[in-house]
Length: 443
Length: 172
Ligand code: FES
Ligand SMILES: [Fe+2]
Image (cartoon, rainbow over all chains, first blue to last red; front, side, top):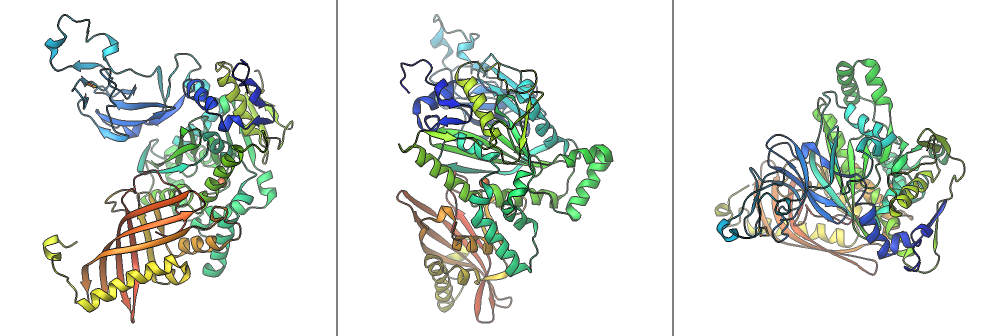
């Protein structure tokens, strides 16, 4: 992959295999930061994380520290988290409050929540200099574009590219369903944020999210253990907390029967593998949704049952259990996953506790399920860093995709979502992000 | 919780203090020697094992945790470690637990209940490159059933509970 060859990136991706360098070559990672995380719509946070004037949520967009703020008029901004004076980061990571304005810890320049400069100390020191408080170079810099879709705030570091709705394409139905499930029509981030470190490249995690071929193999230890617990401790009964562990052990036909759908820009989803348990909590919830939306609409909402949706390259909503996993590349072989849990307004305390239980069992750093995922990701990373072989196979289901209108459909065990991610990846990396076809319909 | 002024002297006699310290050491011994079923049987039927996610977290059911496990979930964790294809346990994690600074902060002889706070250091070793140091405080809510102290709640407060974590496979 000589750098002298201008097409070196292009040659890393073939229709059903990729060169291992996409996971292991530092030059690829650096280019991804620029061309993928510097171009795509990347999830920043949810508007409920900045409810009031002065609330801030700080995170990373690729390698750029940014801060999402709420100003005095109620508008949301996303700013580069650095002081225009000497570059100091203005806020710590996570949630902070800066009412009524930012004060830089270094020389106390002050900024409004929209980033504009309010004042600098020792003002007379600037008399007669070319310092001009109205010149944007002396204010905090906003990111190029910010859009809020039903509470989910995304930003793009590039002026160019599609708007957010066009970018989300068919995957927007998962965002809609996420919010539609709230009887009062509103959702909020609540209950704390779990954080997990993976010792592997960020793309490995994205590929796994719709990889229906792995659960039976990878999760054997946890689903067999859960079945034994059920048998020996509960007389064969499978309560919710065991269902979401042992469900990974469904027979091959089950995984083959799932429906996979993929869209432009690398997004996709798979249909549900775990269902909400029957019983009072679910019945009360459905009754509340019926009252709020009418039975027909409520039926439509709850019948849209999906497992992971992929919003490439930054997050993965789970609509049925109200989780959003946010994926932040840290380095070529380190990936941080942040897990947000959402409270649906108009649901019971018990319903909320079930959301918490799901996150504790499936997504927390102590998950007996995820631990084997993280292990295999690391094994992939270590294996690909060796010189044994150069190519990574994505052949499962190749050539059997159904091309619909800007949408690809395929059988349950296809690696189509992975191929779809790399189609988008190639276009970003070759610098043509505005025209990503899926091969579907009119493209 | 009692104030430091009330804790400047032990609130239990030295025999009970020693008995409780022995209990904590014994519990750690069971974890270090991988006798996890015996360890689990120290819990009452409704006993809970809890690693909060946030410092001072009060609520285990309305907030996420690093772990909040009842008898069923502890049983799954224990059985999983014994499974042949527990990939992340090839090779298995080895751990050592040290428990110190045990202070009994509540004791009700009539109800048979007792709360002991202590500090811990845990080191885990796995594979050629994974050495993890965990530290923090334990709170054990105990109850005496017959001659045996049993755990109603074991709370594990990690100094870095709010950090970014590698997986927790064993019990801390
Ligand atoms: S670096 Fe911010 S005021 Fe000097
Ligand atoms: Fe998995």
